[in-house]
Image (tube, rainbow, N blue to C red; front, top):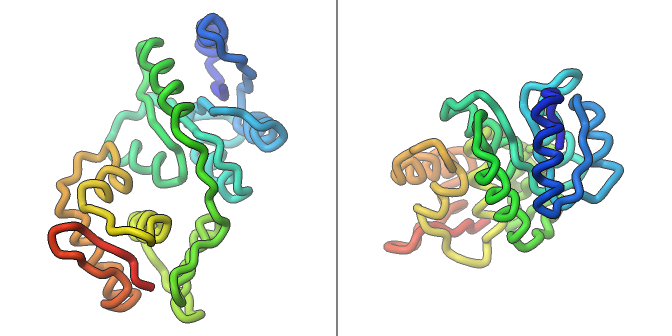
Length: 213
C-alpha cells in the first residue's frame, strides 16, 4: 500500500491484516516504486497524489520495467478523465476516496482472482509492432504516432489477435469507467485505419474487429 495519509494507511493496514492480507506500507512514490520493483507482490494499492513521485508515474515506471502486478489506484479525483488517465497508464482498477472498506476488500479480491497474464514485451502481428513499455508503434519499420486511446485500442486488439473482438468488449476495456457510447469504438478504429492502413483492422460483420497486421 502506497499512500501519504498515515492515519488512513494505519487503519487500512489493521483492517486488511484482519482480512488475512500481509501488508507492506510506503508513504511516498519513490519508496513505493522501489518496494514494488524489489519484491513480488500480489497487488498494489496506490494513491495518485504522492510526494516525490505521483501514482501515475509509479505505474508507468512499473510497466516500463515489465512489472505487471495488479494496481488499484486510490484518488479523491472522481472525474471521468481522471479515471481514464489512471487506466490508460496501466492501472487495473480505480477507487475514489472516500470509499467503504468492504468495497476496497472486494476490489482487491477481484483483482487477485484474475488469472496472471503473461504480457509479451513487444507485440507483433505481421509487420505491425507495438512496444507497450516504450508506447511506440511501427508499421513496416516506420514509426507511427498514436494518441493514448488509439494505442490502448490497438494494444487490446493485438493482445487478442487470435480472435474477433466485439465492440462492447473493446469499449469496456479501453474506455472503462468513462461512460462512452459503444460507437466510440468505430470512430477510433477509423483513426487507426487512417494512420496504419485500411487493412490493419478488419471488420467482421455482426461480430466485431480483428487486427490483420
